[in-house]
Amino acid sequence: MIFTDKKILERLDRMLDDGINGTFEESDYDETQLSKLESKWLRYLTSSKLSAQKIEQEREKIQELVSDISHQTKTPLANILLYTQLLQEQPLDEQSLQLVNEIRQQSEKLEFLIQSLVKTSRLETGTFQLSPSQNEIDSMIGSAISQITPKAESKQIQIIYTPVSCTARFDSKWTQEAVFNILDNAVKYSPAQSDITVTVKEFELFACISVEDNGIGISEDELPRIFGRFYRGQNVIEQSGVGIGLYLSRQIIEEQGGYVTAESKVGSGSIFKIFLPR
Image (tube, rainbow, N blue to C red; front, side, top):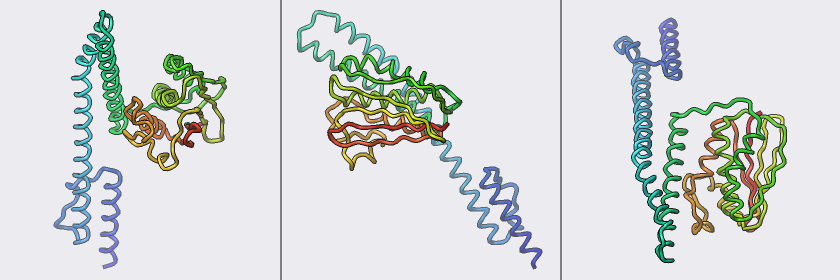
């Protein structure tokens, strides 16, 4: 009896290990030779595996759908932007020119949204794997600042950054996008002729990139929600944007073992901090 119980426990233990490791195969076990408890484990692990397979199939379908949407809309959107540009070069009255400018802005917004959804989908489904390695933070921040500079200059906003010698472990391309999204957010909601300060601090386990602005700020009750997908605060509804930049930034950083925090008060600006593992 003791030998039989030990044998059953060993088989249950092996079944659980197979389930945890993802190597469980129903064909490895003969239900007619198992105890009632073993039979229940068998049915549970079999259903769990089928459920996992179904989830994976659904992820693949979503990824294919997003990729198809991106591919099918790329050419029409490019044509709309081209025709809009051609119209802007024509002698139009003030009202017509205003409508053409609005079409262009909405088309660019749609293009940005589609590309952001594609990137988010790839990250969430694991289709695109980040490749963190030891990199210089300074060059990555410099590239992100270069990208946002034209938009900042159009509002006479100065981005203050003093280069530092510091390294961390991150995927340079994707992390640059995460930093750019936070800078873009700061420029968008900061008043004209203000400053945005970027600093880097080294800690034992993390390197911290801080982006501080003098913008409209975020209320305390909204702070926990600003990183949600498509979330936009009540005081920025009339501003352009789709509410996915901060969400994408957090996804990128967390996928690399880092994290993002935000501190803010209404009317007193905001401080976003990106922590990258050393």
